[in-house]
Image 1 (cartoon, rainbow, N blue to C red):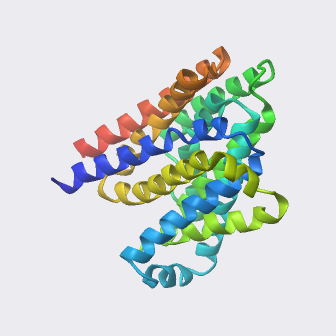
Image 2: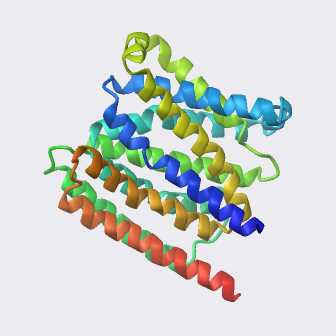
Length: 287
């Protein structure tokens, strides 16, 4: 098996494991912060165990040496755990994942601001289409019973935070930031802990909480490993699978219809990024 094929398989599996994330949040009957607490704690300890078995403490020392960049990265990842749950709890799953698809746009802006990378005409056209798509989704939230601008705002924050975190990773690309993930997840749970009463809810739904954490923990590791063997355009195309599959899964499992405005805006967002990434991938191969 070639490294390229290995990268494709690992990344695809990682994306598929992320797809049920929103469904778990819907199925778990608990306050959003309780769900966020167990999501962070279980996923964090799973990743931590895997790292200690495979790397020991060496990787953690390397992350500490990245200084303020590593610290900001860890804080950003930590805040996305409760923010994601709050997003799904306050708006439709379709809105959340379609907004998440805008992450490359935020990444391009942050890369321009902090790394001095140029924004090419292709990305400007893509940004324009994505912004229009997000505006359509926001418009639909005002007339939908399951969607709300509050959840949409949380989803925008998660998208921007992940994009900022990815930009920071690129600024310290000689260091693997995977060891920061369990620190972020567990740190988030520790911060949330004093504000919730999670034990009783866990006892009643422990299988869902553990399953949720296992999916996220495994996906985090695979998505940190797989893209190392493929191009950024290929990785971006595979990540778009979540935006397509997650609403379909939730719709099939619990009958949550995305709504016509979310579908129109989502098709525009995903379609614009799909065309842009396919063009970039084709240009890269021809070059």
